[in-house]
Length: 249
Image (cartoon, rainbow, N blue to C red; front, side, top):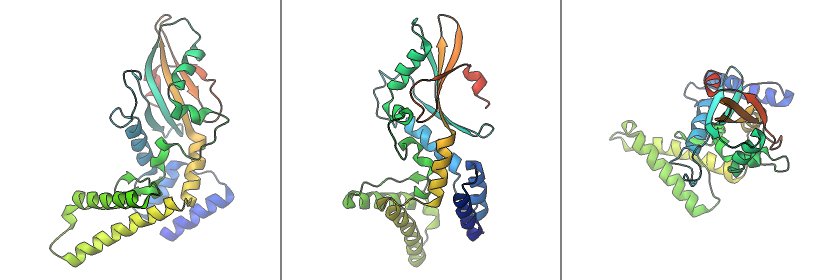
């Protein structure tokens, strides 16, 4: 089954065929039922990235932050901010452009002139870099990278201590297996290798990521959303839309 999956991915890449992320999840589950869902991993990582406790921003200035959501029905991955109040009389597009400008990490993805191969908050989709439920990033500094590897293996042992017994040979085999996994990830990242799976995921993300800011116009008692597509520029597409209408998409 694993061989069939590899052949399928190769065929998809060669023919530039259409394949959704949920299709990838399905075929990966056929190869190995323990495979982490690409969609779940990507969504969880994105939300963790923007969480108040994990993103280093001045929250006295940023009173709202972004959330992440995959819509299977629409085949879209939304990165959205909700319930921003617009009290001023300025035009809605200008108001939204000011809001998105406060987040340069997102603004860069909208800029036609800036080409970034990957956005950090989308790193969770690249499951080839996943070890023990964590997306790894290495610095190419050997000492710090080795500390990261040792820390991740120690964390694995702690979180999976029920697997370890008085049989030291078996214990060492488990540790060696995990070291082998993390070493493959390390070599891939350091050598800047791009797997076939990475290429398919990036191609799909380029198509399905959308940014939204929900705006409550308190002066006119109307709710809107400002919408952007990556690398299409700063000018938003405006919709009359309430967050409650978006919740079930």
